[in-house]
Structure formats: structure tokens, C-alpha cells
Image (cartoon, rainbow, N blue to C red; front, top):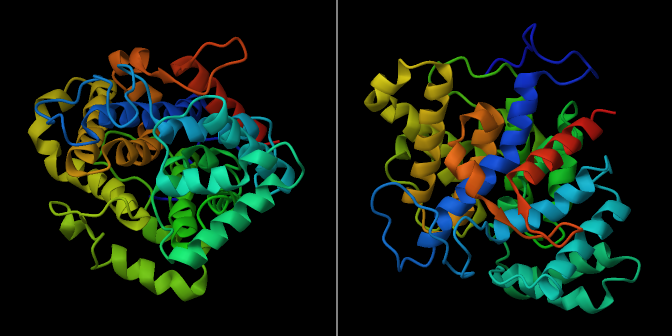
Length: 368
């Protein structure tokens, strides 16, 4: 996508346009919808026949329409990011780390990744003492030293909100994505995935809105200057000729519990929508809003249907799709359905309006 802003895009350091704000809100909202779409089918006990339904159940025994740990964890990041805090600062990372400890110990989180739970529980007893983020990073590093395998997809699933935190500074966004990832995931590939994902989101919002052409979102290859030089060839080869290349649109990698493959499922879902768009030609003629909804539905449906870790891949994909097509492209029935933890100050669960508000606050605070 052309990186030059159109006349209707935001001037430097100015307010965001209505289109950009819709895309900002779309990041958390489409993430939550993709998450909820995948929840019922996550263990594989319930077959996905026809369109995904908000049935609840899944690994967390969720209520119908309740989002999973993917979105829950991201909202603890959002509460900090919405203040305008620098997410690379120890103070902000401490707040995020304490939030996750509260989530596991007090909120009653049920579906928590094995690696993430191990890291959080290793430091939770000292959550109210200074330096919780540093201790959490140390626990993650120790786990990596013991196992050598800490590139699960849990850091990526919660990452969408980070892409909104510094919209006019791609390097600050990348640094924040890696800093938040490293709280629980020491493997550098986990951090790389979060950098690529966050930059795709940031770029989508800061570039012109979708104009009804085939789905051309931010190109992951254009993010690789933000990756350490020693791993750029690895990533380039994956996206250009390797397992994540567009030629693999009908056979995405199997193990999407691995963060690299989970990101690949997301990017390949967009390629699939382009390949399949002609099937919805009649819907495409009904106007841009309907067309955007068709594309959003195709991308999210493909992400969930083609994956094993369905709620997580749905969430990862949804954050990117929302940053490109906006909240307005989501089916209103899904929007009114989604809800979940963490609870608000009044004890009620969060809903779509809370997601919109947190996303918008994060984006606006990061511009000042």
C-alpha cells in the first residue's frame, strides 16, 4: 500500500479523521469478534459447519458471545496504553504485569496458555512490589533457558492494541510491541511477530482507507526493517517463497500454536479473501459498506475455519482486518454480542462500547 497520506488523512500531529477513528475502533472490536467466532470450535469437539456461531463453550467454558483470554489480556494492555503511557517504560510494564496477575488470581481467568500461566504464577505473589515487570521478564527468560521453546502465540494474540499506541512513530510502536511481548515470551521470534503485526496495524490506520478494490492491507515484507538484521532473511524467505507465501493460501502451516505460523494464518486469510472475492460479486454491487462487510466476513471466517487455535488466530486476524476495514465493516449482530473480562470498576463485564472507547483513547493519547 502507498505510504503517502491522502488529503482526507490526518495531518502531522493533528486529529484523526473519522475513517481513521473507525479503523482505530475496529482493531479491538474485530479482534474480539474473531476471538468469539473461534471460541466454540477451539477444542475440536464442536464441528464448524456453516457460518461460525456465538455458541460459547470452548476451553474456557465461555458464555455465548464471551471473548477468551486473547482479548482479556489485550484489555489490560489497553487500560495502560489509553493513558498515553510509554509502553517501553518500566512503570507502564509494571502496570500491565500487575493487571495480568490480577486477571489470573482475582478475575478468575480460566483459559490461560500454559507458558503464560507459568510465567505469571512465578511472580504473582510479589505483584504489588516494585519491579514486577523485570521479575516477569526474568521468569520468561528462565523458562526459555529450560525449554528452548517459548515462541507460542500468546504474545501475538494480545498485541493488536499496541499497534495503536504510537500511530505516528513506527519505531516507537515496534519497540513497544517487543517490550510487551517479552514480559512473557523471551523467544525473539515472538517479539518479531508482534513487531510485524503492530506495524501492519499502525500502517493500515495511517494510510488511506479501503476504497473497494481487492483487499490490499499492509505488506508484512515492508515491516522487516524493524526486525534485527540477523533475522530479516528468515522472515523475508518465509513471506517470499516460504511457508507464509501467498502460494500457500490453501495449505497454511499446521502448527498455529507456534507464533510464526499463527501470524501466517492471519496474512494468508487476507490472500484467501482476495482469491475468493469473485464469489461474492453480487454483494459487491450493493455499495461500499456492504462490500467491506463481505470482505470482513470472508477474512474472519477463513481465519477461524483454516486454523486449529481458532479463537487466537481469529483474534490476531481480526485486529489487522479491523485496522484496514474499520469497525463499521463488522456485522452489528456480532458487535452487540461480544462481552467479557476484565470487569469495569462497577463490576460489570466489558462490551463493544468499552472496546471502542479504549481503542480510541489509546490512539488519541499516543498522538500527544
